[in-house]
Image (tube, each protein chain N blue to C red):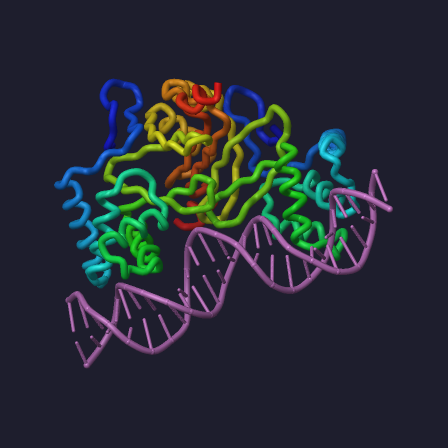
Length: 169
Length: 169
DNA sequence: CTCGATGCAAATGCTTTGCAGAAAA
DNA sequence: TTTTCTGCAAAGCATTTGCATCGAG
């Protein structure tokens, strides 16, 4: 995963997301092109702006936030286009759609062979990504025990981060 | 938890929710009365119908589903009242609000000292409740490691249940 | 009597869609 | 030239709210 404090047997995390490498961005663009090719979809300037902004973004952006960034590059792009482009990214498997309970959809880049869940501060909204193989394993085991073939899961931990707890006291 | 195959060290589950005992329903009603008392809220016939229907229900009901049941007892009750009453139940800690990704809020009875998560069949919508102490423990540990004080969590496993897999093959 | 609750309809907030004109292929 | 895409505004949906009226305390 694209993260900060990796290494060791602990969960790799990213308190603050970083940008992807230029090579990875290119590779994501190529995957998207291939998908569009396969589906007879067209590469327009608007799509290129939206997807490039998205691939260069970090964190968990809402359509609204994405629209602001997109309009810095092309003020004429409408919000329906952003919605439609994110839907395309989702369908092509290049973006995940997340819902953290505040009523808006947030999107994040889906990097291949990478999976993580979220720890969310209910006070300041900070999102920390985490990955825990032991939990993953227990989930699989549990699903199997109930006869389920697992496809995906949602695992979000809500609490108060250290900074907010300190501020409050 | 109100469940089927309990006992042992495995997760207690309820494939099919059962009704609560009359004693438990009464106790829930008393808790609600106490909450309303404390907050200067009034006990109206509509509220009594909605809360009684809810406490006697099983599973994870949407407002729409609840409204149908409520109107069997009093056809004049409006849906805003059901929304408002469920909000009251949520605030008083007697109901949990859940979102399983289909865009509607579902509610379930919050029985004290009971906690469970969900395994959802993406094909038929069956919801299986589960509880896993090991996962709970790992979550706490993980949150603490990131300086978070955990308040609540969302843990949903989506997959295909045994019956649907069989039907498909 | 008072003030909270109800029911209706209107408003809200996010997301989706219809359509005419624009632009890829 | 054909077909998809865009931008706008309108429509959808679940949920919330304003308000006149009702009814619990």
